Image 1 (cartoon, rainbow, N blue to C red):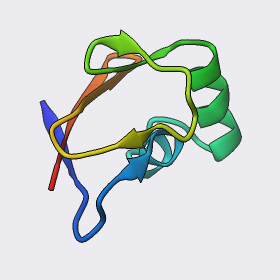
Image 2: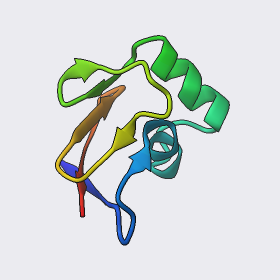
Image 3: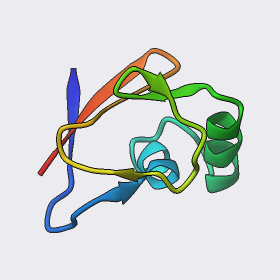
Image 4: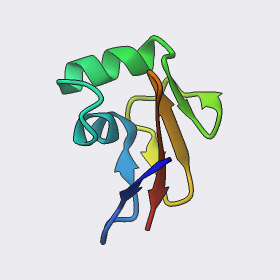
Length: 70
């Protein structure tokens, strides 16, 4: 499973994470797939576009899986 480093930040918004990882082409597309229930955080469907993702959480979308690290 791949990992995403928060660097010096405390969190990353879910829609931004999808864009940064290249899983979607735009913020609008990220918000749409999240609203449609296609994204899982720690195994549960997440529909909040600006959900704060912190170190230790796992995000899944369209066959991609990533663990967020500090």
